[in-house]
Amino acid sequence: MDWSKTKTIFIVVFAILNVFLFSLYMNRTNEYENYGVLGEASIEERLSGDDITYGELPETKEAYRISGELKPVSLMEIRELSGQALKVTEGHTLISELEEPAGLENSKGKLEFGEFLEKYVTNGKDYTLWEVDEEKRTATFFQNFDGNTIFYNENSTLTVHWNTDRKAIRYEQTMLHNLKEINEKKPLYSPLQAISALSRSGVIKPGAHVKDVELGYSPLVELTQTQVFVPTWHIHVELDDGTSADHFVNAVNGKILDKLSEPDTQEQE
Image (cartoon, rainbow, N blue to C red; front, side, top):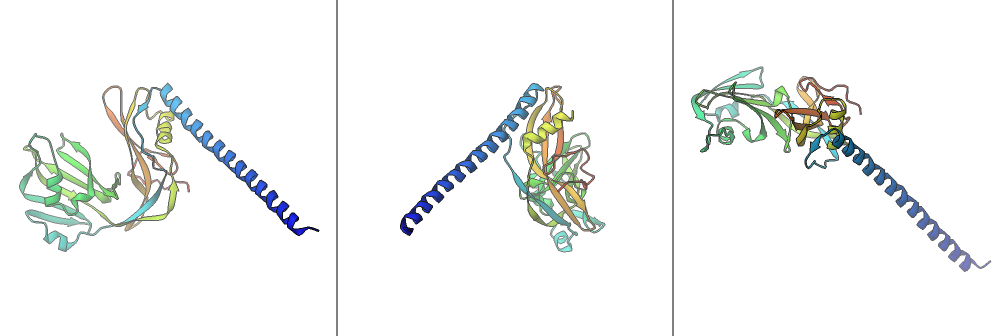
């Protein structure tokens, strides 16, 4: 037997087999990708048929859950806060009464909170403005982690109050610390799928325009001192009557979150 020729034949056969298997793999991959595109396209067509429009959407595909602990109010930090009468409740809620009202208006007469947060609030840069209520004269801020907002969590909220002269007079602050990513990254529902879920359930009505979509976190598990948060899509919608609304969808399982104050303990893995 000519082993040299036999060896050559085997090499050629295996090379052909490898080419065949690679070609089969590429065909399967292309079929999967095409299926995904068609699936997204059908969502787009359905939303278009319902007269629901949207702008550019974020492309986040995976994210971690995060955990954090209730931050006790530090006496050392309190000593650094001047011009305020301070009170601590339950060990982690700071209530501040300003000795002199602090102006909040900028040169154009608009409310602006950056300077106030920097001067009067510990770690003020870690909060994002969520809502301004001119009637109640309050501004609500949510703590953020790595640029993403932690929505509606009473243990990571700052509320600023002002008087009729639009000068700050009081604030209440709670905060989380030791925030960190936990477990492995989770694949996320796309923003388009989240919008579609809201549309199918009737939460978003025909004629609505999705103004903005952002990824943040909402409470998943609340323990005595530690909390766990799940990636959550915040979808801000403008309605055809001129009003607006905010909706939230669990980005891991696609569940619509009606009451963010209640942890979504039924999340599927």
